[in-house]
Amino acid sequence: MSVLPNRDRQAERREATRREIVDAAWEIARRDGLGAVTLREVAAMIGMRSPSLYSHFDSKNAIYDAMFGQGWTLYLAEMREHRLPPAPREAVLAIAEHFFAFSLADTARYQLLNQHAIPGFTPSDAAYAPSVEVIGLLHDVMRGLGVTDGADVDLFLALCGGLLDRQLANEPGGDRWLRQLPRVIDMFADEVGLPGPSLRSSR
Image (cartoon, rainbow, N blue to C red; front, top):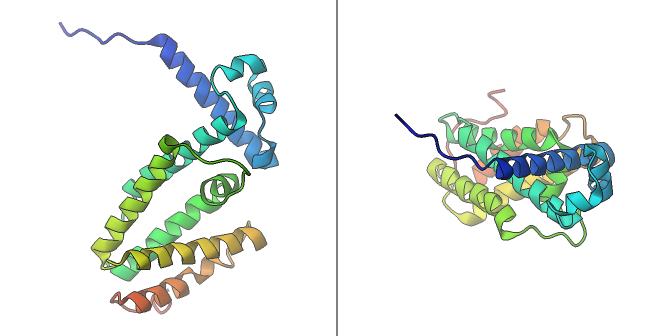
């Protein structure tokens, strides 16, 4: 007869409470902006006294840290599951479109993960680790598509980030800059020597 492993119910409850706190912080950030996240607001949202919340997160930045790590962990999981077309140009465009979709789906999350939106906040090594994995995976994927120079990957990231910043700053609910992606990826592909027909002519 198999023996079930002992469950640490106290640890499970504590982890569930931490998730509830982080979920509440995201809700506040999406509703009122990242700067509106405070220990008092989070505690009030989940019906917890502030001193009790301190036993889970000792500061507002500790909550931001958990949010940061959660956000990049989610993107890393999506990136690993994302299937790319075989043609290099189309694959690079698919990577950019996926990043756009993930970012535009949650403006507060994009700001926390990709912009210095919180003065004085620096993610911990543990929270930062998933973002490092994302960059490593991106380099591996791009290398497989023929983009072998790290500086070229930096250029790709700068192009995507610039378009996203313009989209969110000027037309957060629209697609004005999103529609430019095929043109931008064509220019990038021409610069780094990726084969294939123009993305603009195939759409």
